[in-house]
Image (cartoon, rainbow, N blue to C red; front, side):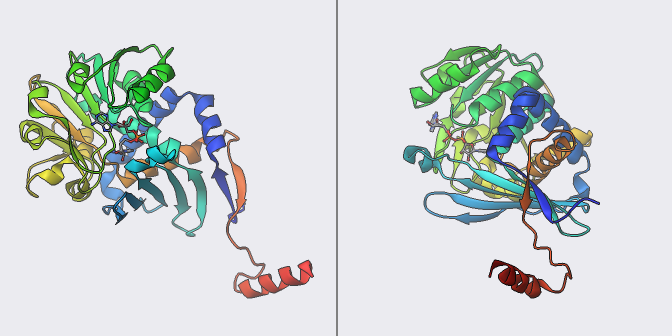
Length: 348
Ligand code: NAD
């Protein structure tokens, strides 16, 4: 029998080994498959908007869900000012547990995993929403998430050209360097408008705790798919409201997106389509070539659950974890204090 007191732990080092062993594009393609499978059984999950603790400088959130067999949660922060202090905007870790015993079965870093799952989710949404034959993407915001987004769109949507823009040219230079040799044709642009030239897909992935105007209405032409990733918190949006009024809007979980997404700018009853219904075929994705589609991404707990499930499955055949002595294990389950006394006697 598996020793339930020892929990497999995936460190940052082991996560990098796992991703490099399989290849980032394969991991994101696999993650999209896992997310798609879980979105198809959407109704079997416990769902709640994430539990957010806001401060003037950022947010710390817990994202729980369960399918009745397994329970998962992610701890994640969002602190746009962190990069100025040499820290990341987003960091995360997560846990998967067995519902039957309540015992954890996986503890893992999720900073890298979040970037992978967010990009996989974006590309999965675009597969259903982007205009047919789109091969160029504008990537506005070239920070930590950007390369993952570019590679997921290459692997899952056939994007071959990425036009990069960031207010900080150093971020664009970093992105260009990191994606050299990826097979993508990269163009560094000096404005968001320039980045959008000829792009069928526009990804916004900036970090600023304000109602930003990364895209204004005049910048968005007919038929474009917008993948809006950066607006994911109350008071933190990227798109001008008029764009939302012209778009068919697709979301993960409305009760959360109405608080955190671009649609916080709209009336609470403004119509949106839930992506899981597009995936099951119950709702329509893009309806015509001229429609502007918007994936108002905020990141939902089921995507992290899928990612945790994926890592757990990979560890069945790959060695990238270490045993963590995480659950107290007294010989007699009711003698927890006695375990402490025996440890004291042993140490004396
Ligand atoms: P980051 O801080 O590493 O990068 C953000 C980049 O945006 C920086 O390079 C910054 O210079 C640039 N930027 C800021 N304002 C800009 C502007 N007006 N025009 C162009 N570029 C601008 O952050 P990150 O980890 O890449 O995350 C980006 C955003 O995505 C954050 O807001 C984060 O909260 C959000 N996010 C969302 C999800 C999701 O599931 N939707 C998941 C992860 C991160």
